[in-house]
Image (cartoon, rainbow, N blue to C red; front, side, top):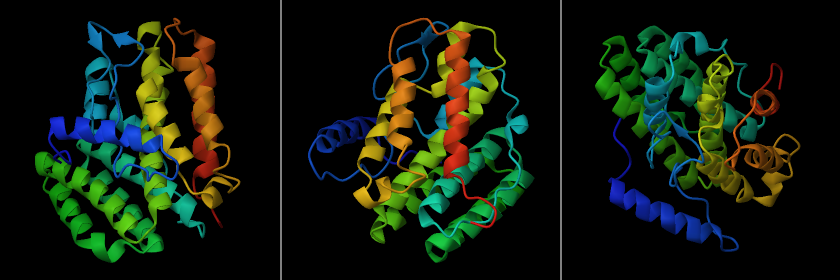
Length: 277
């Protein structure tokens, strides 16, 4: 799927977003602008990522640097959507990340199965009517193994979802969807990095310090009522914990990697909908 705007425009948006987020009461950016600065570590002969990546680009970049067995990163079917719209939004974000994973693995059947869960979560958030035709179109493209068009459809659908939520004045839910997407992507990569013995690639476990800072800033711009919810309240400190360990030029050790992986698992467990919730 195509990116939301041309590269130069995206960089301007990212700069304006950074300025706005420093102001009291500023709105969160409308879409994640990640990797706007080079990560602290390089991988191989160059930086780990280029700026302004979509999740699809992110997974492509990871696949170019690590031997990824994408289908081994599939999860069990998620719990039904929660009565908490905030947890459902995070869970929906994780499912969208799983859609990107199935796209990257070129697994049409898994994509269609995951699509049904996405639709179920969209119903709880009241956005299914506006996204149903796009989801059905994506399922048909997956069935026909039309990967190029499906990629565009997934990226556009991701952007449409966040736009619709904001039009409903559910800005916090849009932010939590974005956080859910990127935490699940980090979960995928850190799972793989854990079994790699080369410290040079261990920084891939958190994507990039720029990504963590972006997610932390979005958490800080959630409404006060949302930030006070027990599952969400620790999130800012979670990102601070990760940044203290990775936003530096120190050579990472195995303990740092293991503690990072444990923290990611804690975040996902705490924020994911649970059976009977």
